[in-house]
Image 1 (cartoon, one colour):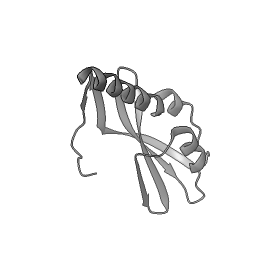
Image 2 (cartoon, helix red, strand yellow):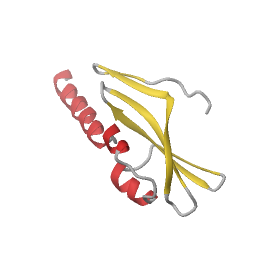
Image 3 (cartoon, rainbow, N blue to C red):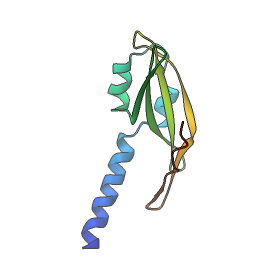
Image 4 (cartoon, rainbow, N blue to C red):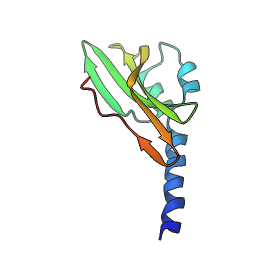
Length: 107
């Protein structure tokens, strides 16, 4: 039974890595792209928020060294990207097949 589950779990892990945005994609971003263009490039966001006339999308971004870090992307009222930053408290580290995720800090 484990011989059947382990390859499937590994495949799911690899596919999730392949569909997660990476740091190079973030570094290639330019302010002014539309929200639709970011979603087309990065996929569905992990979280959304709307505050003071700005729309925010958040994504876990794959970093070198088998780590993910949460990024928040801010859009103006015209749905244009105005900036982004990391939310460092949500760093996820993958060690072997163990995924360690910190508890929400209430932000």
